[in-house]
Length: 390
Image (cartoon, rainbow, N blue to C red; front, side):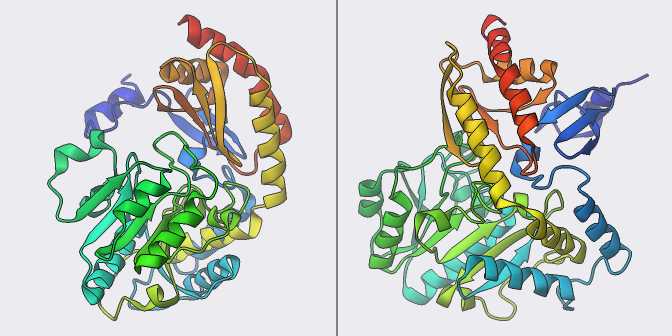
């Protein structure tokens, strides 16, 4: 019988390669492969599965909504989208306006269009983003993405984007001038390896952009919805961006993104300027409301501290250190052996993500238990041993 992996390889474009594991079901932070193998999910579908798998509240919300009203398009309003927009603005504690999309890339495309229109209104033509930053793979979002390995072959791009070293406030101040329409930054760089900036960097970015009249766009696709122990990462750093983009953990596994403009940035778009057939889909909005109603920030902070402290207590020649915030961490290696660590973890019953050659991403469901964290911490030294020898 042809394996699922062979069928995948035959049916799909080769952009992903063939993934190393095939899953069939999950419950909480545990998933099971099609062969019955059990794994502890330690990266949550790239920081997406906020409530884990098959959470009763998520199942109920989605089931009820799909049995009632699944889709309307953006030509008709429905209660769930309004409730979700209001809920997000309430958690943000700032006046703003919301646009719903289907993904992080689409949320960033909306933010980019807002910034372009703002630039046309104010006579600004340039943009600033960070080296190694990641904002998506569509051509607009890719033009702001500072990773040459995924960017260069699809250029040239129509936008004038200046890339500066992430975390270097002086370089940012030098790049932002009166011609700059917007600065796009991640509060912590995700795909670069969960790389946090120096303390005060994002607040300084706020000061720099404000002084030159440029918009500050905070890409919180990975860092929001409780992932760092706060609803939104920027809330811990004491600043408010002009535009905020969300996705991943917002839908708890269903596709949804959001672009939120604060103050004047919330009214840049006029009727007809942007749209999405599926954006604000009733089922995805119902899922997002269930996520927001069931994420327990106190629990996130408790288990996050246990995970970080436990990792920091491990002494191993392959483990250099830990970085990140909340349940969004990278274990940094002394050698480029992340692929070996990921494979050894899988054999031990844990799913982790080889994010960079020397970094493993840990972004488990926000409902992971202390006992499950401890099971990973107990197993990790042996996983590192096997990776070092392999």
